[in-house]
Length: 160
Image 1 (spheres, rainbow, N blue to C red):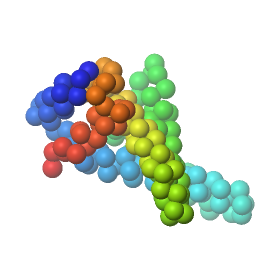
Image 2: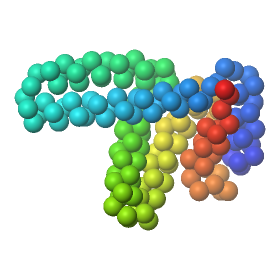
Image 3: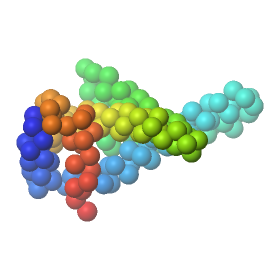
């Protein structure tokens, strides 16, 4: 699909529905942080054997599942639910490593990780927007440098 067609589909979807990508984008970032909290709770438990970290992990996991269900519609025939969680978690981790590299003065390496993180985040949206039937992404645009450049346009043109 060409960029013009993709943007046209985005505009049509925004006109026809209550699609508010800015709210969903905020929610997806919140979910990323919940996945990180699950990981930190696990590692804290392993290091300390303090049961409170298992309780925190379970509480955070249940909240993450509830919130992820607002964006990701389960279907029994695919691994979309699990893929979505891993797209968000991987994107956030690459972003965090990029931040560390940038702080260390390794700008080129940081930018590469930022690009990879944004591609994974774009794939998360491609998987889930398509599944909601609001926007169908048939193929990667030849004019773009990856799926995120198309998704980014959608995220920049949010309905407020």
